[in-house]
Amino acid sequence: MLIGLVGKPSVGKSTFFKAATLAEVEISQRPFTTIKPNHGVGYVKVDCIEKEFNVKCNPQHGFCINGNRFVPVELMDAAGLVKGASEGKGLGNKFLDDLRQADAFIQIVDISGTTDAEGKLIEDGNYNPSNDIKFLDEELDKWYYGILIKAWKSFVKKAEVEEGNFSELVTKQFSGLKIKNDDVKKVLRKINLPEKPVSWNEKQLIKFASELRRESKPTIIAANKVDMKNGKENYERLVKEFPDYKIIPCSADSELALREAAKRELIRYIPGENNFEIYEGKINETQKEALEKIKRNVLDIYGSTGVQEILNEVVFNLLKYIAIFPAGANKLGDSKGNILPDCFLLPQGSTALDFAYFLHTDFGKNFIRAIDARSKKALGKNHELKHRDALEIVIKK
Image 1 (cartoon, rainbow, N blue to C red):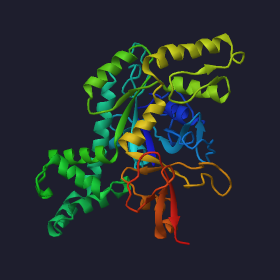
Image 2: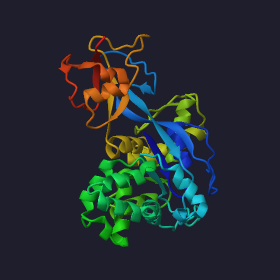
Image 3: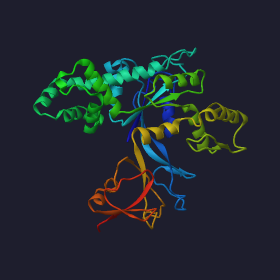
Image 4: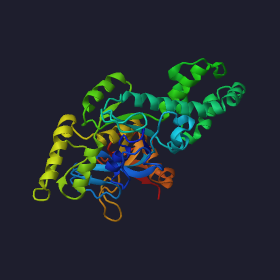
């Protein structure tokens, strides 16, 4: 799974990326500070099952804090996109290519209105951030339309000959963007276009490309810098203006400050929570005042900085994944003695057999049954998994 951070320059994408990953990246108000995409590991937050089994887990991937399991996901901080990117402006073609393999997008928007359309700082804060949501929609739609139209005439004619093959031809044309046949079929059912694609006009083609983009690259909006002047007011206005988008208030700067302080053991902080504990004697008055400002202006008002909430929203609600723990019915550790060492993310609707294949091809081929670690019940290969299930896979020896 790959989640792409998108938006115009200087809105806080690199700050969000660093806050989520604590990776070393350059952060600047200069447009196009990020040229090549940065890749890193962020984490979604899951209630660990350790307390249910009265054990202390020992994760081999990710980490666990007070029963909060953090499961890794890949993040990509793409370079800033500007109006005309789909036509090559601002190295747009290269930047769009970087986004091909993303499963979903987080659009970072400067909700304070202090950066103009090109990401340049404007002190009066009178830029309308709704323009950024509209422009990105337009550029991504044009990107998809450009890919679609390149081979439109040839594969529409082919679809006329091979009746019922249209969705497969579209899937092949968009194969580099991880579009599935089911995505195409779902869009065709949703928008109710004329049955014969050869009769579609340009407006209908654009509509098809737009819906295909929304289906295959779902997007959430991070209303960043919400704690700055005009931030709260602009956020509330955008929620009403874009009811089809999930828009979450965010302060990436605050999250980065809290995680850095926790890393240096100045505070105790669990990402996504609305509070932190200062270790007295370890910070000076200036640091304490800065932390209290974050508590007062961000955590007390919005319940969190938004960074962790956004990551969880993308994975569990937009992409509809669930977390599954490999766990033996009578043994919770691996061969090295690590307790509950793994937690994996699988698509909703996955079965016990899907999980077996996910763990190893041989497990799938030699599957006998799964055992629920909680109830000790045997589960068949078609048993549909639920979020936070704990399973042991039994195979032929």
